[in-house]
Amino acid sequence: MLKTIDNPATVPAPAGAYSHVVRLDTGDGTLLFLSGQAALDENGELVGPDDMTVQSRHVMDLIARILGAHGATVDDIVNIRTFLTDMDRLDEYGAVRREYIKGEPPASTTVEVTRLFRPGALIEVEVVAALS
Image 1 (cartoon, rainbow, N blue to C red):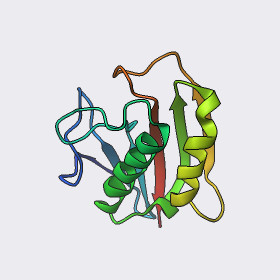
Image 2 (tube, rainbow, N blue to C red; image 1 turned 60 degrees about the vertical axis):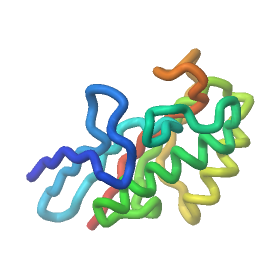
Image 3 (cartoon, one colour; image 1 turned 90 degrees about the horizontal axis):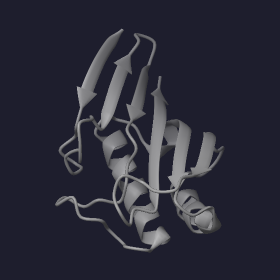
Image 4 (cartoon, rainbow, N blue to C red; image 1 turned 90 degrees about the vertical axis):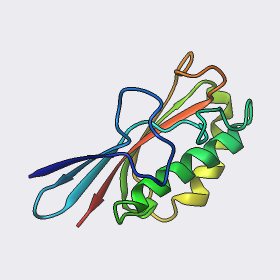
């Protein structure tokens, strides 16, 4: 098994002491473990304050770009974990998620948290993707 740590140039640098993706090449396939993504731009500024739709779209775009840097797409996601600061806004996130993830949905967990690491961040999403 080969483990590779990566921070693709297609997305802003990590905002802390973590890597965007850990890639495990097993010989039979590849697993991509993405760190939680929040709606931060290239300057580390929050995108779409108090706008769940804008933040959700930005997060899903970041995920798609990180996956793309490793030859994967959102169709390769097998597990998705979502952290929301307000479960009453789940439908807003869900509408955006359905724009990106079509067909059979992956295994999924969504939880409400009191806050995220950045004031104003409404959502953070982490995924696992599998390539054969």
